[in-house]
Length: 356
Image (tube, rainbow, N blue to C red):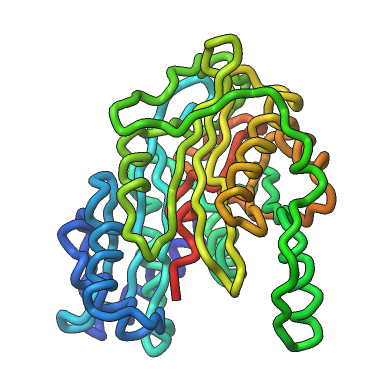
């Protein structure tokens, strides 16, 4: 498109004149460069060297399907886009999708358009790209490049205990009050659906993916679950619950428990059931957050684009939700159908936020 070509010409000549070099590498090969860029310039984390090493090795090296595009100024990393690759069901076929994350550039180099040029390199790859959320400036660039806003996803916040509501009220008064911890009334209603933790030697359930009825849905990678379970302790605790009914697999929930702003959170990264229904989604979500409450969680975070899952979440009162902007890019202009099941199982969405 003319706009994209203009940006490439305008920024490309400036970057070339400035001596900027671009490289695309497996993330495992450039962990030290990623660490140098993030820790020294952008993240401002209170990590010692040992903690930083463990988290960066786990995040960028231990899962082998990740790559990173970097810009260098005379050998110094100054901009990057990390990218994961995952298999998805798209319009009835299994295809590989790229999931960009960690798209950033040092402030003093932004006038060169390095972030734009890095994203262009990913857009020239054969696989489609899927982005959800992100800074408004980044979304503006994606829209300008012709990325399609195809799906309607929402991010949800569900209070699990009275402590969350107490802290929310106290923060508006500029103080912190550690009140009693009573469960949300919805959590008193236990439903009769059994579950167990996915064991280290256990395979994930083999759900009939054609029965889900979605035009786009991520496929769960067993290696990714093991990778999450092996996260450094500073990242919190990842879990995978397998649900059953009448001795048959009936659902799965992947989540992360972590401390944040004086409370304990659970992020339900992904929920999947073999035959989607409001009733079954409600059971799996309710039991998952009941488990999280028993483990100390005060608030749950979820993302949902499936109308059935969204309807199930409306049963949990109160809940707060906001739109999660979703963008799709494919070189040939093709787009999936609109029936989507988008969760936090995309890019680095499931492992955010990082500990401070």
